[in-house]
Image (cartoon, one colour):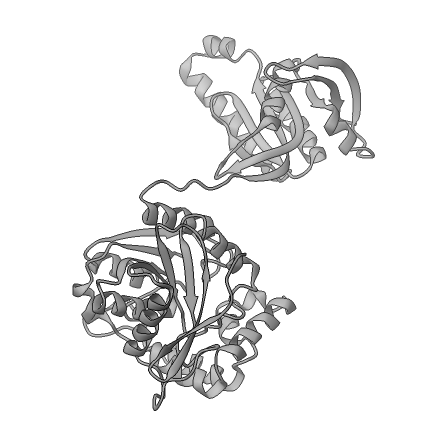
Length: 447
């Protein structure tokens, strides 16, 4: 993380604190804060730090504390800062860093201020990225996609008034994380650093009731809407936005947790944002992990297809794939490819990969089929749902050398499963096509 130090810029007699993460000089993304905001602690949670770092691959990223939160001053004579106050703070930060037009990125309760800002200052906003947000949260006249008014706002505000500074708001949405003591303490610190308990209750009562639907017709900039679909996410409100903004693209993603940047949807969001901002498909550096690759294929599949005919062969092949997937699930394998009569899967350990291969061979025999398998452990590049790298090529070449019914493995695999109870017989050294050096291979036997 290369975030610069906290700086301050004046808005009238008050001061607003901000930070900048340098990236591409061609474009700038301004992260518009939610109600909870503190530039001092924003980068201390690893997922958020990683997300902002990824943004800097293709844009300079800036964030600030709106007045009344974090390191910034309060707004004189204001019980709760207004939409105009929020916009004034953003303009002051853009002027301070010398940026004329930006992409505004806003999340949840920051989305309404972002919409208002884009409508009021079209010359400063190049595009919008809106995540898990809404123009109005609650149901209203002519707006039946909101949350029914069943006292939900009162429940949230009353909880904040009693427990703000203890991580209360976050864990209303994420009760599954209450046992993570480090996360509980971090969230509580962020709450305390954002603003006091009474101010937090006042702000949430106002902003949970905000309605900016009237500004929607004035917004003409391209807008990317990222929307999780899990229970608790504002799914219908996000779709309403996509249907009413003039130039909007909606990207929905499966999520278990509300906060998109925390766990679920992160990669989907980053790829969509990069393509939206740059105009080119995302070019994410591949993740490199240690994995065990398993290749299997059906022996004499062409002869089987000829003997059985197309329809019966397809039925048999479907049954084989079903049994393979059952075995992969049982041994914690990840299916990469089951095209044709081949299977490619990865495992987090070589012993499970071999036992899965034995189980696949047994299931195939019950169907009247024979398979051969090749296994290798090495570093692979994970690219979405696919994998690549020299370890994948080695595993494929080993499978090509396996005999009918054999599970053939590399020396690396043998060394990693000492004490597993699996027996090995040397098959000598081999030159693998397209791979340098010679490789010692072994036939594995289930004992």
